[in-house]
Length: 266
Image (cartoon, one colour):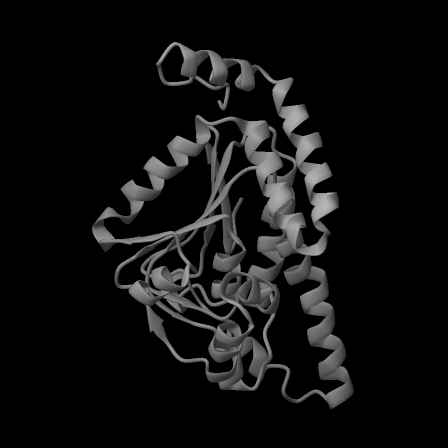
């Protein structure tokens, strides 16, 4: 797929690359559209076990493209309201929901700048690995915006209300070590090791129990909006479904035989 969001699938691992390297992969209207199409395609791929989201060149994403924003400043308040709302609802919201609904584990691979919608993407992924020199910021308030891409949903769940508000209101920059400490990324590694580390993590997930992973994702995502009794029932049903898979039989047998399980992840 050509354009500003490139989707490639090789050996069961899908790599979705934000591809405007000359602009630090800033989110343009074109990229919103391309990203939405790429994720929609990904949703229908049956040959994918793991998804990796990354940026081309030296950066993940430096937030929204301010040139695209500026191109709409001549509009009246009413027209501007309608334009931006439609843009976010049609492309941004659809992308985030589709990514959240993927049954496969999704890994963010982050280097360089990660700001605005870039950070929203990262915190919406299941796992995130960054280079030690990566830099992060919510960025929105710095240009008079409130946020999009689920940032106000994911940050409070990861950090609690107080810290989420601090990051959103102040929009300060923070480094990879702080991102790890806060739990926004899984781990930070030297920049030269980033590709290898993510490849190893993706391979590990790729060889894991696919249905169990899908059930785990669904249960965790639902847990914030349900009562304990309902969550326990959902766990019972998901657990029972997992027991019907070949992976469950293999996992139990391998444990008893003191060997590594050979799941049907691929």
